[in-house]
Length: 115
Image (cartoon, rainbow, N blue to C red; front, side, top):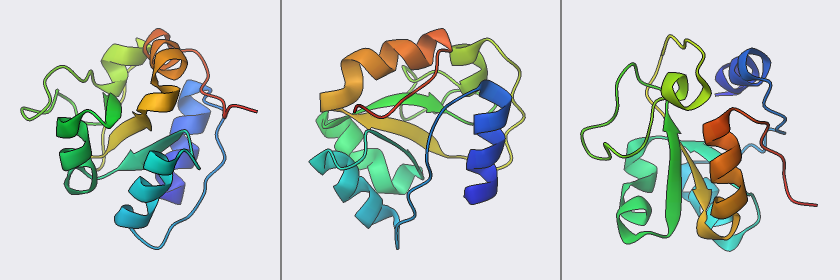
């Protein structure tokens, strides 16, 4: 995950700090509590909270949209830059951070943690 995140940061100019968790469930809990504003997750970790509307899907790193969440654009669609996926992850943010960060992500601007 660390190598993937560094690649995304470099290729797309995203300003993020990696916060390692022991697993997806711990990371999603941090996202839901507002401890972190955004995260990279496997679909199994965020499917239920996406379906419940507790988080907003920003982008998927596949070469096409997920059939489970066709409304979530790919990284290439969201940023306007090519992206060759290596693994399939979903990028999601909490509802609390969704309004500003969702528009920034979709316009290709930098994501920054609220200070």
